[in-house]
Image (cartoon, one colour):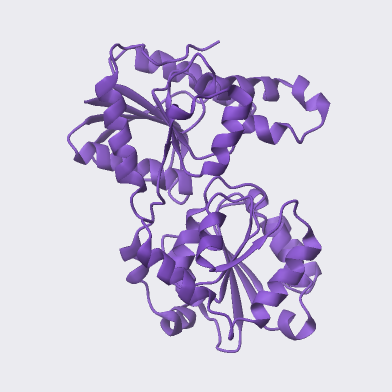
Length: 381
């Protein structure tokens, strides 16, 4: 089969990007001819695939995405693909990997004037091109939570959704250094409590919330608690805030890393107070590493934390004082609660590795059923 995979921007340490890369390599390894289209690419190209960089035009995100959608349609129309697989909302897809939350649902919480902006109209149109009634694109879903939004806003038929299991690499976590070695490597003393955050996009992931919670800890906890942040984002203003609050020596930003399992093994608690999160693969990875989890309930994979009893969920709507209390509560109870043990037991008894293989199965199924080059696609409005 001849497949096209499309992603606006690839960089090595993003969760969506890792899923994209893995699926491309699996499809190529299965013997399919795979072309990859992107507007920006950092790092190596996936094995067995041909990479084409499309022009990146526009002065704003919404204009660049609209132009990418048009350029993508022009590029794929020149070739006869059995399936076009997208990881951003854009017209012309046969399969969409739903790694982002519903734009329409998020926009509902914005002020009325926002709906008059070109940004709103552009992103709503692109989302509608995937989920609207004129499209038959199949949707690879990470969490049941998001399905309700799309069905409510667009009337998307339930048969178009395919719920995927998580997709972590257990061997990668199992082969990481054990706790004592990992803490020595990271310079973390035995008398310290290490709170870990992992994820790119610091505002979305709630790093500012985490800093305020660290600052609000009772004196005896505040003095011995460290916050390590792994991922890409604008760290400078957050570092300045931490220094002003006297936390400069307790907060460290590491950027994107390939050795996240080392950090998971070294930490005492994973904190994930995200404002929005379709899934949150790091939550499952933390459970596999035996790490207690404190997460906002809006995250898709928070349901796994709750089922396992592997930590606590921060209620929605979010309140900073509630997070402050829950962080202190969990840190004080680390020696008495069995959150970590329950998390590892849950991972051992649940499919947490099948995402990419199952996604490839659906892509093959869609490609084999496609009757013509334009079937199931929504044209650019």
